[in-house]
Length: 263
Image (cartoon, rainbow, N blue to C red; front, side, top):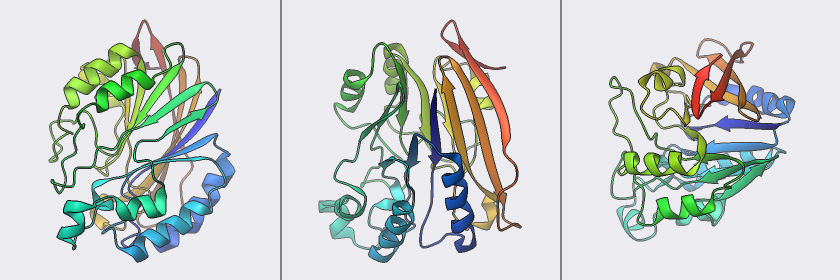
């Protein structure tokens, strides 16, 4: 069994300061094998925000896998954005923009979907899909982690990453079973299963863990327990009106004949 905790969209610099300690306490209590953070560690990629985010991450005792988001690229420095967009991120969060991790027998591959030439929309770079396919464990359970979602529901007003359909087709065929993403600040699992577009890949689109944007309504994170083709999924929600998290909402999923469904 593997236990993975998924955070996304921390937005340090525009975050709920009163929720930091409760979130760290919950992460410690969860005892995950791996913590995956799918981008937007900061709100504007400023040095002070990166330092604050790094200090938060350093208080997590579990192994970390981090990928950048569009907010982790310089906003107010066009020269840096053009010529060295990931320099600050690499300095604070690690040289690898697309790292790999392991949680028990589950392999997790990170993807850098942030595009310095677009404010919001992400992309798969040339050769990225091939690299991912090559890095999969052909006999094991594979998860991909990226900031930008690979599929979006019609009501969402942001575009999925460029080449998303091509990537998903090849990754599903190669054996990816779960995709972790963020960016939208809206939690989604079941509605994506119901589209039937990618039945072999369970997509977990996370809400924001700490962003203080009042229109988000709540902050949240998820914990995945993976046992073969069975998934126990905990959703931990902190309404904007509370300085802490409610009891988790728990759902169960199973992959049968290559297709995910809720149990």
